[in-house]
Image (tube, rainbow, N blue to C red; front, side):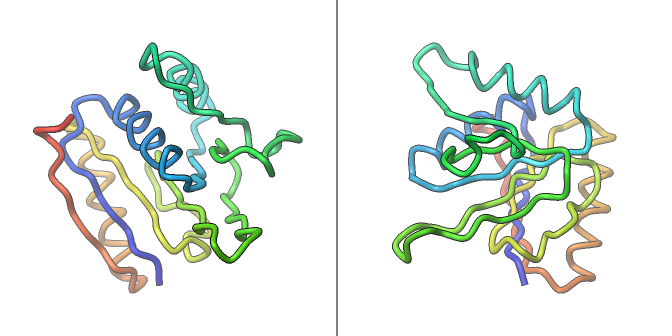
Amino acid sequence: MSRIDFAFGARDRLRMACEIIRKHYLAGREIVIYTQDAKLLERLDLLLWGFDPTAFVPHVAANDPLAARTPVTLTTQPPVRRLPVQSSEQAAWLLNLDAQCPPNVGQFEHVLEIVSNNDEDRQSARERWRSYKADGHILHAHDIAQRA
């Protein structure tokens, strides 16, 4: 079963996603970002280039020829976890930005969910929480309202 971490209380969901993606990139961890919403993924792509003047987070679409060598991949297709090349490498994490639970969630040891204060976002997060719980995943909630 996967560990699912919900970060509740983000003022700006995409900005918080950028912060989390940067944190994992700097820690040497691969991360796959998934949503079916192509426009949302385009907004995140642009934001990753300019959310912080000193930040550099290399990222590409999952179907890009450079995806195998790029630590951050973006996809609207069912996410696929890349296995570490060396045993010392950390397994990739999944950041779900979709309103639904992602397909193939069981492939990932760790899944991140960012939830804003928007009522619609909170409601869809509650539904995902219930679905993950029913599937037997390990759930954790974090209040990030003060950090957001």
